[in-house]
Image (tube, rainbow, N blue to C red; front, top):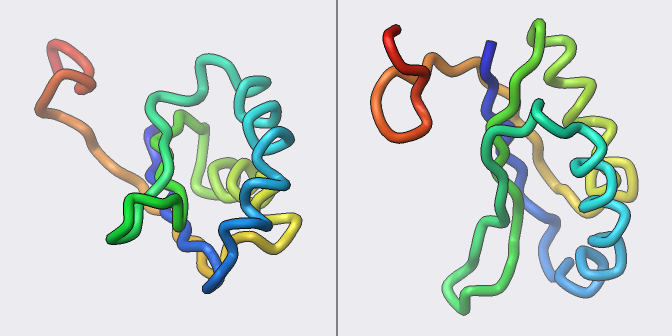
Length: 98
């Protein structure tokens, strides 16, 4: 199944985000093929202010565990975190033939 991870940073957290970023990138690089798409949310000044990921996981619990294992979550960069199942069926990233 695919899941969307949507997280907003705590206010005024850009410096903290940048300090934690290397371990965040290492964490997700280790997940390999489980990551379909990932990138930062941007504020009005085009500065990172959160994260959006689309991941493959066996269950909601597994997807939430991935999200909560993210160093941004563990180190308190995120102020909010949502994990939602998604059924991608249209577009370039959608599974073909479904």
